[in-house]
Image (cartoon, rainbow, N blue to C red; front, side):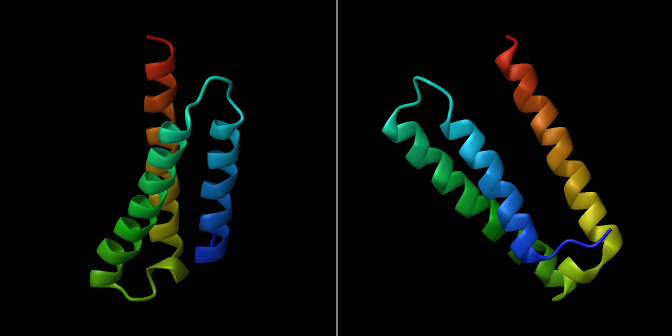
Length: 82
């Protein structure tokens, strides 16, 4: 399974849009989410790029990132049930 940087950004943007559709989210919360998205994308690219500049072309790396995102999503969903 290959995913490009553009596709990863699109996925993140779609998830962001879903979050923003929720009622009651303040402008400041949205700004924090925007900042987290930027920081998250930057961290993934810079950390993985240290070992392999073209990490986004490696199927195993992409799969690992996607699995990590799935786990993060599950964790966040658990928070919503608390």
